[in-house]
Length: 426
Image: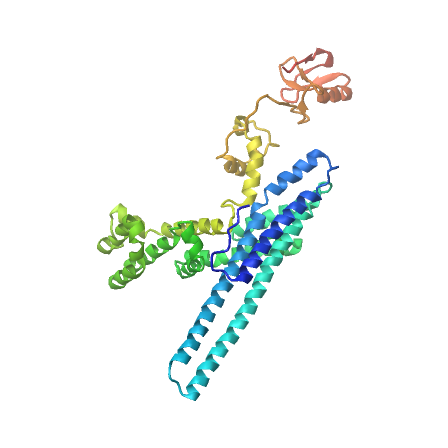
């Protein structure tokens, strides 16, 4: 797992806390490996090992939230202390009366008391995030190769909660997390943060999104994100739509001009709407006033949000299902006579598997139409006079029940068991 270091200038306590978290993560990962019994069957060890490899997001999200809380608290402390120190300097350098000096110092003391309250609140937030990181590490350490069923059931619930949160089923996700007692293992509070921004964008309000950009400015700048620029462009477009041209020009000078050095072409296109206006029929500018621009902003926010917290853009449920479907997808799955037992006979699964390649099959596999079991050397195929093939196991059972007579389940042909011919698989 790649983890960013704390930015230069962090307070010693913040750096120590973050380094401790990294050390704890490494130590717990080693503990997970050590917990795997060397006497356990290799297949179970491999299964557990592969399962743990998929838990990158499980640890990354709370750790990123933890670092964010540390950075926010550090900024508050730095800002308030700087203000107090400057206030003391001003008081010593200026000629104040005794009463004014006492009043000034009392205001600084009140500010320090406010800083103390904020620091205590920040400390509680940091402790909460640290506890969540610890709970998730403990959960990974609890994985036992001898009894993975409970652990997999918990992971399934986590995946379902993740899917519900991404699909905006927040209340259902909360109830499932509470009933399964996995509140510390899911990211409900993180998605609630995203929900506020998404709801506002759906209501054509960029204010919460801009506030989110301000809170994560350094991270977004590091990833060369254009999201804040896109928000500013949309706010400018709304001013033009309302025909508030003077305000739009002032807005552009204040908020759009700083982006000119890196996004001049897009900036010129948007500024041209001052001349074309919202009722233009020119396709180049008409598209800027369409409502789908807000949908684009929502999609853009989701991408930036997931990137910031190290999440997958696709829901985990889709990823796991596609991993399984990729092993099952063959051209036969899309034929009309595809068996109903095949998940890809259902339209919803076909849609999910549409971007996936076909499974690479080096050898054909024969599956009995009657028992749905594999036909191999232990259960060889037998050929009926009409050319249809079924497994030995199925036809022997049929012959025992019908005095040696066999009836083809697809054509109705009846014959003796002695008339069957064994087929050989090369």
